[in-house]
Length: 161
Image 1 (tube, rainbow, N blue to C red):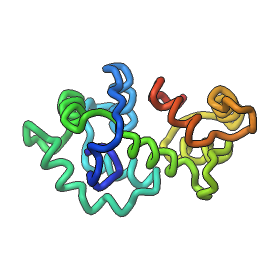
Image 2: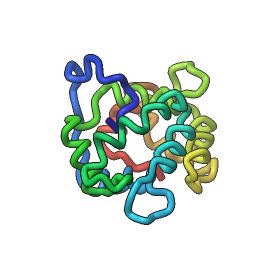
Image 3: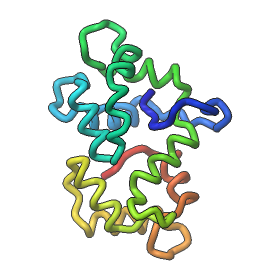
Image 4: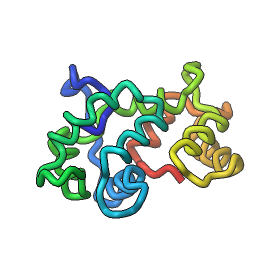
């Protein structure tokens, strides 16, 4: 549900189940006004920021599944429950997250691409911070993050800054 896939073949990919602290950090990215719940508007803003506008049409379906108490919002408990039902973060989800960062589609994430996406997500990271992030993940020292390095990072932690 919180993946950007269509669900087809989702069971064929290995999953990573984040812990509660990681889930809370992800939830907080969606909950931009920090009221303890995700509104459809907040969800749409994240989709726009990561370039997934085409999914906005499915917001009603997403909230119908996730909003267990029917109040029109997704609270943290509901967020976790839906994520558990989905079985964790699939390899396909990680690939789609990689593609969100890799804006030029060259198969590598540069410092500038990290900076631009985090800026669209409302993060207060400097270019220097982004360079440090890239260096911390860049295992082969080529100055960019490839898919293998990104996958390793995403299965260790889900924090952005």
